[in-house]
Length: 220
Image (tube, rainbow, N blue to C red; front, side, top):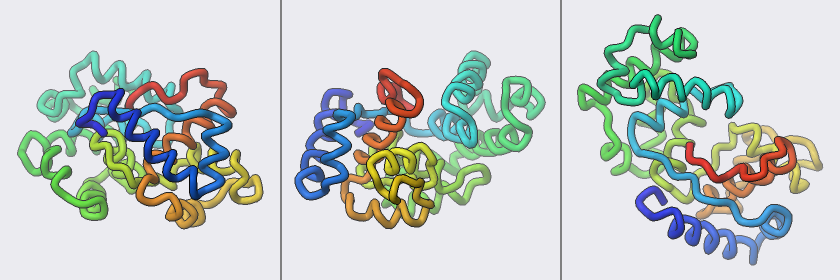
């Protein structure tokens, strides 16, 4: 999706969800309740990975506040980030551990050990394995990157609590929140459009639990 315009990406999402809704009552119920989600597009490479690391275990609003400070300081450029001290990054809002992670990741981009084209050339499983080999990037972060920066259509970040909360809102798990393994197993029914269902579930959770009026109109 990231190589498409927003309108084209949204049309692709709608087509995929319409296909699923004809065979899956849960997707059909979600669309009737919340409407179609919008694409979330972000830049491939270091900036999106940085945002994903910042967002780990933080609310969206807290993460965004930190990202604003990092962007203003130039930390979204790998070259400049690699030259910042951990103390400087911590003053901008990162924990000491996250500061260490993002500096090391920035150096990998600067030194050519990792780049967007390298990730994009791999299949889903191989790309996730490569990303997870870097400190600070776990399965959730890798999956979020592949969804938003590369527009891969069949990714399901089951470790995301809000996503599983959206599943509960549609009655999966008897109204309770499924664990990660259960959610991932159920989501196999939605292949090859699991990314699109993820967007739908996030939209529903945002509307019903956070009171978001437009929960899905921003990129990562």
